[in-house]
Structures are given as C-alpha cells and as structure tokens.
Length: 136
Image (cartoon, rainbow, N blue to C red; front, top):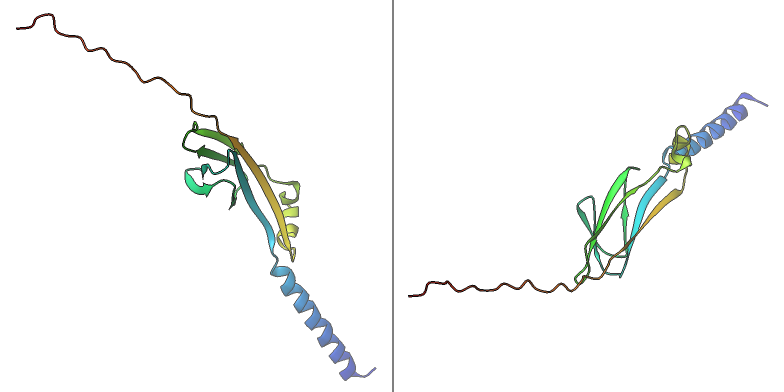
C-alpha cells in the first residue's frame, strides 16, 4: 500500500464517521402526548386551564407531572380529574440521553377518559309572596 491509497481510505472512513455522527446528533427523540376522551363525546376539555377543544382530542405535553382536566357539556354536570403522568423507564437517566439521540421518534402516549353525569332536574325554588298585614 502506498501513502496515497491509505490517505484516501482514511478520508473515506472519516467522512462516514462524520455522517453517522451528524445523524446521531440530529435525533428525533421522545414525543409525549395525551389523548383525552369523554363519555359522551363532544365535551369541551381544558388541561390546566388551557382549552384543548372537543373530545376526542390529542395534545402534546412536556413534563411528566400532575395535570388537571375539566370537561363540560350542555346538559351534563362539569367533571374534573387530576392525573399524574409518570415518566417511562426509558426516560430515566442515563437512558434518556440514548433515547433522545435515536434517529426515530419514540412515542409516549397517555390516555385520560372523563365520564360526565347528566344534570339532575332540580325543581325551581318557589317563593311565597306575603302580603302585609296592615293595608290602608
């Protein structure tokens, strides 16, 4: 082998390593989302006070922690639920660094189902009108 052949091989190996390195640095990582459904469907849902729209609805989230969900629909009682989203094992250190560098998406989907109860027909309050005892 001469020097020029060795230099060309080294450059080719270096170029391939650079391409692989850039591909690993530009990883897709983990994408978290929550899917909110309700019974009946079509209820307006909010997550931590932010309106998400009508069920069924998908929403990305960043943090694995507590989230408050409130659903409301005309003719039904307002229902609320607090859910804690726990981090999956593959997002614990040091595995999280490896998962974020993966060249494909790793999904993490949480589901919340809210059941709304029909409103109770409450009778309207009745007020009696008292006439004054002294009339002129």
